[in-house]
Image (cartoon, rainbow, N blue to C red; front, top):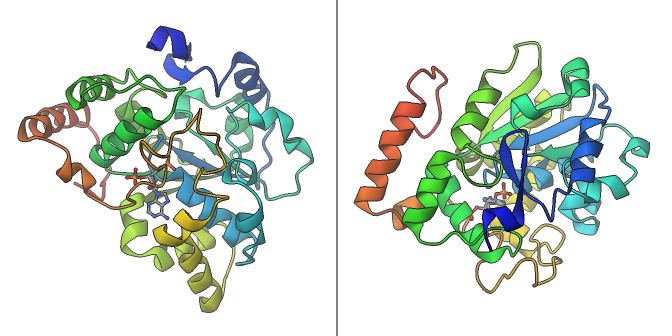
Length: 287
Ligand code: A3P
């Protein structure tokens, strides 16, 4: 099926209509934040699910119950997904944990007024590309990616769900200094998960003892998350996600793009990256 059949255009970017019907986008527009809300914000395939494991465990002081009993999409719901409407989020006790793939410019009025706490997770766009390529191939509500060359042109041009990686990252790194944002890299979490948990906990005003940090990091390593049916998307019916085509928790490594890109694709990607990021001063971990 085509973009015209599967996607809607919302605030200038494609969103898959099945997961983000107009009523859920409207719900988000009218949503009221609290100052102690915690928002996981990502461009898709940058480590959202990982953070949906880490943050609830920090909030629960290492009690595993939330991640072993509640699916990730309910414990840290995407505000733009239809599911959010059914969860009675207004009644949830603080601190509430949410996720969103929205660009900075797409955030609602309440966000800019309240300035809740944000964890913005970034990942090397080449790995985001590779991860997306497999995801688009296994999720029935996404447009089939076609060849890698075809998908690369769409990716570089932002003609995929949630638009351009470049615009997303530039928008969030240029957010107003008054906003409460911790920038974190997928690569940093791979390199030092315990250190990352500690850093995030500190940002959230929690001081956790080393045993708790160790316990959280252990639960959140790839092989353990992959076993957790509340986090590995195995609860999603096969008609929506076909795990035989690719698992959602696929490889969980840094640099898998090297196993997929041809030399020409690497050059093409580098040239577009260089051009689109030429004015950006922010230091990325992959540069
Ligand atoms: P890969 O496809 O490269 O394996 P998102 O949750 O934003 O959709 O991102 C999904 C990507 O994050 C997938 O990447 C997935 O495997 C990876 N991921 C999820 N949990 C992880 C973990 N605990 N450690 C490392 N990578 C993880």
